[in-house]
Amino acid sequence: GQNIDQPTEMTATEGAIVQINCTYQTSGFNGLFWYQQHAGEAPTFLSYNVLDGLEEKGRFSSFLSRSKGYSYLLLKELQMKDSASYLCASLDSNYQLIWGAGTKLIIKP
Amino acid sequence: GAVVSQHPSRVICKSGTSVKIECRSLDFQATTMFWYRQFPKQSLMLMATSNEGSKATYEQGVEKDKFLINHASLTLSTLTVTSAHPEDSSFYICSARVLQGNEQFFGPGTRLTVL
Image (cartoon, rainbow over all chains, first blue to last red; front, side):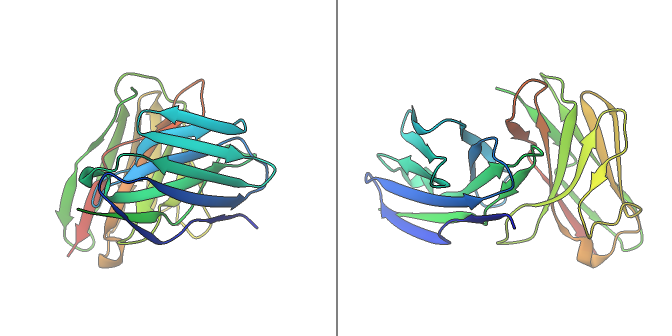
């Protein structure tokens, strides 16, 4: 079956770094997405990885290892506004997004 | 970036009525749009995939006669919740995929409350 695993909740301190892990098992693979979703709002696109390696975009970086079925989202210099849910999603062979349940990130001062 | 709008943002209706939600891609064309539903503290649940000019593909367990989807143009898809009941109360979100790409861009969502 298809499965996306990510931690339910994480807590970090303002100004610090946090890494949110995601493992996936999907029928076929056409890339891995990360989305940010604030409470009561729709998800917003953060990153898309289809090749192995690290992609950096400002304070956010995303890493992919296809052989391990593993990705992480790295957030640096955390700000209070980064408190949100972070959704990992794998694009399967039918180009359908398979969603993880999301990781709720709590930032403390 | 690609912008997707959704209207209305919030709707409250009586049980038994129908509600139409519009999803528009404002600055790009989208052959494929997706409709999701999200209950509180749960992940997104794909309801259906909407392709321009053809019938929508519904996920297992989603009633196609209850959730009517029309994708009449490359920039507009509509979801009509027919004979709404309180259990249909949820956050409905659409997304659109650009013609040449895999990213999905989401609308702001519609919060439906059925009394």
